[in-house]
Amino acid sequence: MPRDLKIPGERHPEKAHRPDNAQPKKPSWIRVKAPSGSGYTETKAIMREHNLSTVCEEAGCPNVGECWSQGHATMMIMGEVCTRGCTFCNVATGRPDSLDVFEPGRVADAVKKLGLNHVVITSVDRDDVDDGGAEHFAQTIRAIRRQSPGTTIEILTPDFLKSAPGSLEIVVAAKPDVFNHNLETVPGLYPSVRPGARYFHSLRVLQRVKEIDPSMFTKSGIMVGLGERAEEVRQVMDDMRAADVDFLTVGQYLQPTPKHHAVDRFVTPEEFASYEKSAYGKGFLMVSATPLTRSSYHAGDDFAQLQEARNRRLEKLEKEGA
Image: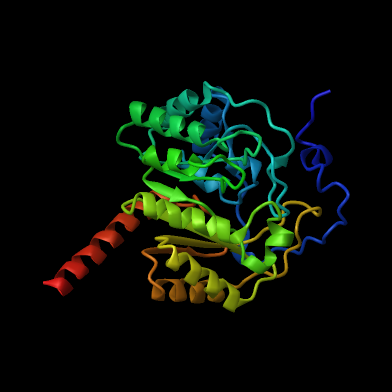
């Protein structure tokens, strides 16, 4: 019988035997309204019509109601089953199906139907595929360009840790407008939070993108509330800036189920404001640091601000050099 991904034990077989972690009550500043409204319903219908998965649903994003009501959905390509088993993530783990060669076209159709000015495309990890799904990403970008040439494209990729050499270059050559790869947490927590990944490899992915195409915007994000210390977060900021990352996101970790990594604490809005101030001081073009910040939250508006910030910096450098 096929797996039923609505059953936690089948959705996360690698977590089924883990002891339960208590899920603390959420503070008032991160409570959100249940999704509703015609915009939400229409977006959901388009996703179902085109047989598309979204990270909004699969990862249990708290902002799904707000984003979908505006027609903004982050599409998750290459299936809904991931080959990794990160302890923070609610995406199902296991052996995925073969890649769907028609998916890039369906994604492009949905982007056109939604009338998006900016779209975010992410994926599961596909360690079972030689190039980690790099060509599938590239085909999806090209399909969107053909149908919606005015739409800017942001991608949130895996780390291509186990992929063939040159895989990352395939994705960058397709010219997304923003290349996002999340570091997710501080290096000391990788063994317990992101055991299938390597911190400095992920950092190198971001650095390599800039080496291949210095004009491409790069973006990365971390979660807080997992047990990290403030000085570790600021060190990650320094590491990102050394890799010339343009845009930083910082959001509160929310525990999907009792089998997932425990919430260490809820970081206050004042602490997020402090992280934002530090990040701008370190030279990021754009920073989003709030409890409800997620990688693709307000991505379209943020992209416009990112472009403006780069233009202002270039103008300043020109004046200083004059």
